[in-house]
Length: 377
Image 1 (spheres, rainbow, N blue to C red):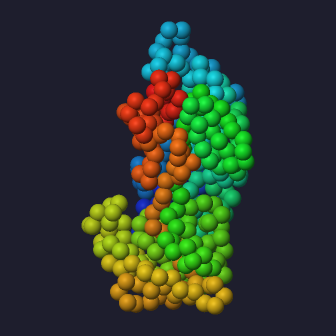
Image 2: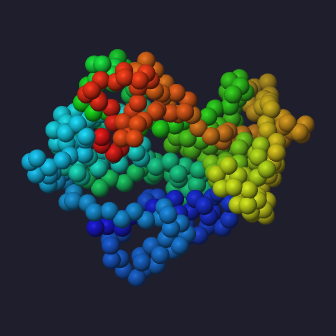
Image 3: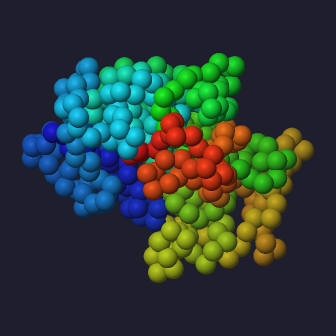
């Protein structure tokens, strides 16, 4: 039994979202592992983490010995997880599309629960799976470099990794995932964990200006960090949600002037309500954030060399800034499922109570049920 303390997530609602001082700072890896009975020094850190964020601070889990996955303890005739009578042991090929937190944890759970069949993980980014919350927190503030945000591994997955190879289609009848390089991967069970991407600025020409950023991937964070360290006079953050507020906090940590344009009455209102939003607004302004609520950015303007120079707001004002970060939420990565027969759209992928992926037309799914999302069905 081990105790996992994710210190990055603990700081999310303290230092980052409200631009308040750090509860504590930790250098190095954003996720630390402690034994169940740590020494006094480590115990104090664990308790401070729990006090800072009791919901996300700790994950307590039991793991088998590192190395080969432990064998299944299910007895013959014992009911499995799948309602069609099969168990993970009898599933020959499992493919997971998406190699971020959900995909990695699903693969680890399969091995921990005794699955020893073929396991393939498909991801569109190169490099090992990494955690995203640190990108708008410790990475921008300089506490952790982008390359040190890898998700922890607690054992060998014995999987085939297809990284830097986006999935471009799904042949549901043939049970194949189609890849961008022309290959295809067959499966008996499929888990879609492709997540979301940052919503871009709606005007492509303005979005292409040098100095306009989104923050979703590790490279986004590394590039934005470098720009913030180049001595910019002011940063414009478009959107006052969690990501926008955390970026504003990082800017103030670095001594960079920052303006936040939020169309709502206060930051974080959509997620936390008006009362907490008003408190967040007060705290941000106390820490030097130029917070402008009830306005939207109507245009981004550049100079003759294609570099961002200013933004026009809906109230008629302008903001001079060499860097703008678009923090307008996210879009779901479901385009690769077009034509697959699944009920997928801008709202995500429809699932039944199982929750298995639902077809786009009633009765069109075959009785073999080739698709799954956690848990098994």
